[in-house]
Length: 203
Image (tube, rainbow, N blue to C red; front, side, top):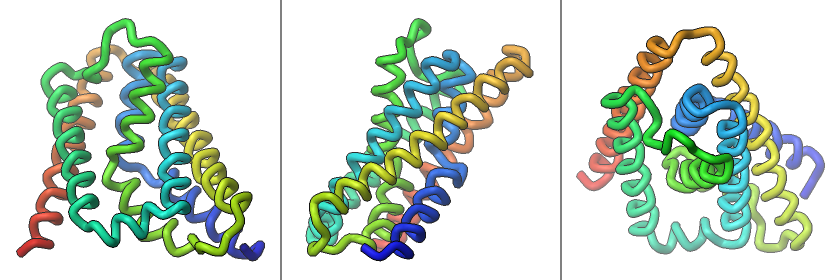
């Protein structure tokens, strides 16, 4: 792959990770609610999820999803269901639907799961990352592409987790709960918006 293509891919991955979205909201809330260590472990888990998504894309996921559009729809609706669930829990409790004594390992798993089921991630890899994939690429190039996407994502989300901790230090618990409820409303609205978009595709 040409050097200019690597630069474009890097900038696109950075733009994708840095654009606020559903994963941003959840990692931010996780860090503010459960502390820096849990937030950072969630960010690293999210980075691993992105790495796996990138690797499965370069090794043929794009072709599989294009051949089986039903699988894309199933993954999207699974993501929508989880978004609405997380959003509902945030609105009702003002807190993440996670154990009070959440370990860093559990945070890692939560971050990984968020990356895997986030519809935005699926769309990004199909529409943006996919065009860079070439069956003629060597194994080294494919692995580097996956590591690049995951490394950039993990770095950005560690920053998001640290921002969540700073937010917690600046605000009292009541305001943190209010912010979490607002995040929950945004998640539910996003889930319904994606659902409407998907339904419109069938009409």
